[in-house]
Length: 319
Image (cartoon, rainbow, N blue to C red; front, side, top):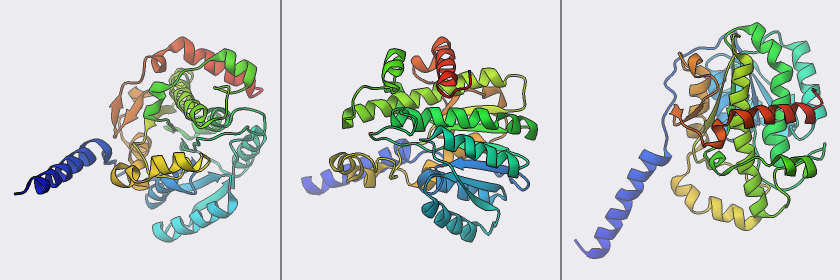
């Protein structure tokens, strides 16, 4: 065997081992059926949100696609209904970059939907700009909008019994921190708008997801509602569409085509947290590859989690 052929065989073998053992991830093994249950999935018109909504619809759930873009969401509703054979898949407008929109969504939902069994806070973004309320986009969309949405729907979750809240975080929370001085003065987690700043803001917001879940579990103690955060895996989706062209090319080509999970693979840990029996004692914890994982030191800081909760309440006008 020539040296070149040996190198190619070795490279292919290494790729297969890395892909199947590191990047491919595990599968949700739950066979739960969801007839009579209702789920809300944010950001579900594309990517892992759409894959999550499709799986829940196939299990018989009534699924609400909570999305900003009506045209894309209605197309996703059509696709999911067709593929699942479930007509109880609906679109409701939700723009997480607007606290007014979050309140409007919650008001409409509470008027029209008698129960809520699964709240899956899936939507996420990385990019520059400000929300309608003047917050940095990553903080406003990835954390604050979901924080307000969850609290507004909490009583309906409690009334439905054995409900779950799933917050999609990321492994990059390990690079995150929360600077409350920056948050107070700039209404954002970073001070700039460059690609590097946007990346840092994303990491910080994913830490907020972990901290929110940790403190939420304390508030839910003694109720029938549990909550979980998770890393979905390294996913080939379009959530970086707001980033500069060179960043998108660097992240998506060619590395993503070789190693990243597809949307269905990326939905597996979300589905595990939503459906797997026996997770109730692990409320507030963090999962990856359909298994319990440890978070960063900052992600285990109870004082930081409590302060983030208090600040978030104030910023949402709840305190």
